[in-house]
Amino acid sequence: MLMNPRPTETGAAVAHDRVYRALRSRIMHGEVNPGEAMTLRGLGREFGVSMTPAREAVRRLVSEGALFLSASGRVSTPELSNERIEELAAIRALLEPELASRALPRAHPALIERMEAINAAIAQAVARRDAVGYIRTNLEFHRTLYLRAQAPAMLALAETVWLQLGPTMRALYGRLNRTEPPHHHRLILAALNAGDEPGLRLATRADVTQGLRLLAG
Image 1 (cartoon, helix red, strand yellow):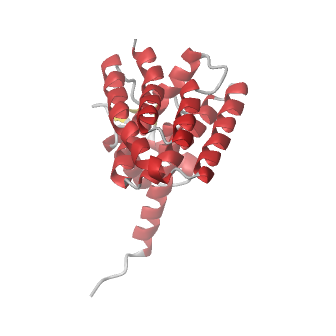
Image 2: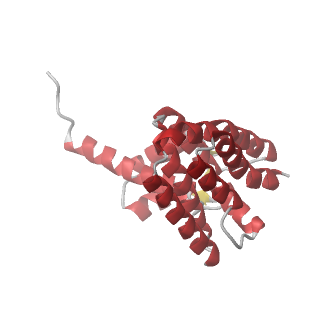
């Protein structure tokens, strides 16, 4: 006979998941800088939870590479080496053109219109000098397309890479000093409209690696 979980266990699981999701979104969208420290006590205060849910959320994010736990117990966002940035850029170059290619047969006009609207929102974030808004809408542009690939395991891998890169993308945004949306987004949209699979792969690969390799250089 299955036993129902005790209320305290259920509440702890809900609290842990809430903290995890909030921190994950914050890190992925560049709301924290590379090397920024955080404490379990501070997280507990911020989210109104005990130390246990905060610890479980942090442990989960450490396992995904989104946070770094030092031998002394200090928790921080990772400061990626050039070699690590190059590695993650290479993973994006492998995964994301494949996701885009798999999505192409299902890229109906309504999807392309949605992506064009997101690209307009990216332009607005750039005009406002809103780094977090830029990163969030940029990832939304890609996720909207990749969801059509119907390859959830592959998309989950891509999102893990985005999560590890979030703080670094924030630093990259400042270095690039953008004044307009990414040029390669227009090429991606044009390839989708034309049903051009090789062009879509090429534009996607260039879009997801160009900036990162500039940062690593």
